[in-house]
Length: 337
Ligand code: SF4
Image (cartoon, rainbow, N blue to C red):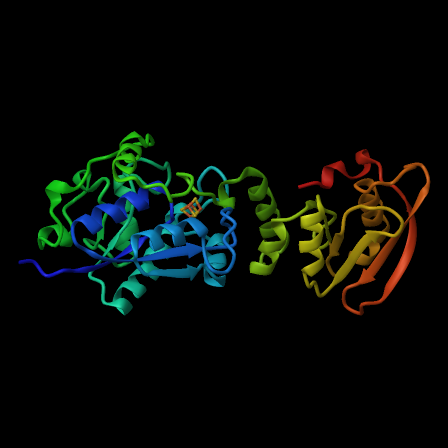
């Protein structure tokens, strides 16, 4: 009888990785899972990892490891060796990064191979057969990545050669459709998985514009700068100075928590409105414009009269009130990212 082997599954919490998990459990593989979180996720995971991945792991009764993509990932976002997709996405380098981290974890937990829910030709940048093989090679995982959903389109891997899994029970799914996976999920009564594609801000055109702007104007940016890109309206005032204006109550609250070293926080003294952050070493020279823009997005009754704006210096915590006219859209439109 074949010895029961342990494998590490890359679990997004979506349909494909959930199907891969169930298939491997049916092969009597001892599965643990890893889920990657990053600043670029749009799934709303908070600290404890992505909800759907946790749910899937919990209902399957398997151990889930949460790994955050940290500053080392930001460095790859700045200079991806394999280029970008149609937006700022770095899918090939991103997969190599995840596979390398998974390899480390695989070795740590005594697993013998990696499982993914990848499907050949499902995604444009990173899921062509040639690219998938390149990714596993660069991660030092040649022969060790089993993709149960499309294994029959791929070369035989070590777990199949060794008889740890039965190749004849693996699938040959390809392309973007998810009919076969949906039907498998329905047969098995699976329902905890999340939306099929998940979300990554690097594929979002507006976020991509913002991160491109950051790269051009502050090439040494870090995760804190990236975090700020997720909230508010962003106005590039010059190479150094930028204004971020909250769009709603939640964003205002988030922006209030941001600690910036050089710059100002602004809000309306007498009306409801946005909380704004004006950042940059030369931010001071834009105080009037930034205050006017803040007023523009507030509930100011008479836009032809001066408005009081409270300004807090973020370095000294000193507060002052200035009076400005509400800025006209035509005056700052070109600065909106
Ligand atoms: S879409 Fe985003 S998370 Fe997914 S592989 Fe591409 S860069 Fe990575």
